[in-house]
Amino acid sequence: MNTFHSSQPNPSAPLYPQLHLRLIGEDGNAFAILGRAKRLMQTHGLQPTEIERFLTQAKAGDYNHLLETCHRWFSCDSEPSPDVVLAEIAAQCLDIETLQTQNRDQLDFHEVSVWSLNEALLRAYDAGRASFAKTKSHFQVCDAPEDEPDRLDVTPIAVLSRDSLTEAGFDADRVTDAEFDRLVRRLGDSYIENHFWPDLEIIAEIMHLPRL
Image (cartoon, rainbow, N blue to C red; front, side):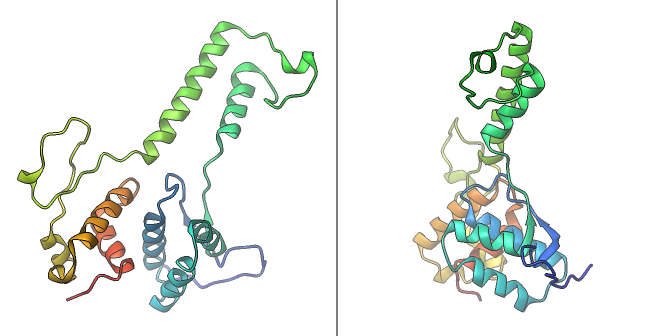
């Protein structure tokens, strides 16, 4: 295991530039980002006090504050905007240098072949599907498998019970139904990009659920 120490010779550089945190596919999912960041720091041997310092800072504001904190601490991915993706497709498939309005007919109107247009549309379609796949969850959790009714719009891939919470070291008897329901929903969101069982403990800790 490698142990990293913070180094910030450049004020604009993150505290841990050698730690790479992926944010792609986590739009709006604060708990998944926190869980991923915590595992990243644990994997690279950062001290628990340093991990707690990050979590405290990250949770001190709204979602935008969380993203800003992540960028201050780590090297982060960011997903290209639709405008950037479409501009690249236009340049590569249609030989159109920019999609910005130039207010000149010879620059704003282009003659393209149908096969080039077909390729550009297919690539845009594939890019949209890929982006959607990163954020769509087919996740269902319930108290017991036999309690789950037949549904065509959901593919169950895991079951969460209070026993699972107890096995992770939490006092399930002191967790209210409302808290358990919130945990289930947040685990569902987090499962899009992360592993289920590590996230159970991380999210339960963030929610301050009582331990045994």
